[in-house]
Length: 197
Image (cartoon, rainbow, N blue to C red; front, top):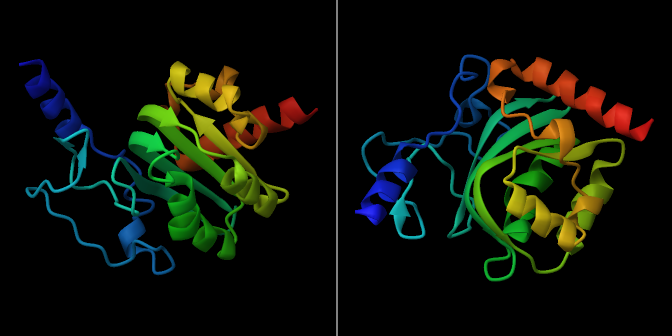
């Protein structure tokens, strides 16, 4: 029964969709997900053997999925929502994320990344070389981890990932859905600038 309940919950978690009138990754011709088609009825991807909603995008990991819910190539920022287990130790998720999505976004001018992680269940570390590479390549930009669970943030800290990702404090804002993308971006910029000052 407990497993059944988890199964239903995992299937029901959709990527945030209230900004779809502003941005849709599969309609963005410079997105790696351009042209993708989604079924509302066929559930094929799983996390811990539980099916997840078919709107999540597969980027090569067997445990972590994502959705680019907004990208602005003029203000140079993107918002990416995640679901599943972030496993660098076994699956090298950060390498796949960097090569399959982030490199492409950086090449198209994105240098500020808002990663939404409230549905990331666990994090398993390998080394930090891809985080460092990502951090070095954004130059004047930043990488923010928003709403990740406390035990995941503790793993980030324990393994020095906090050198490359900014998180905690006001960045654990469970109300991010009350903003439009530009308001969220401005709010995070203010927090980053305040911390740098």
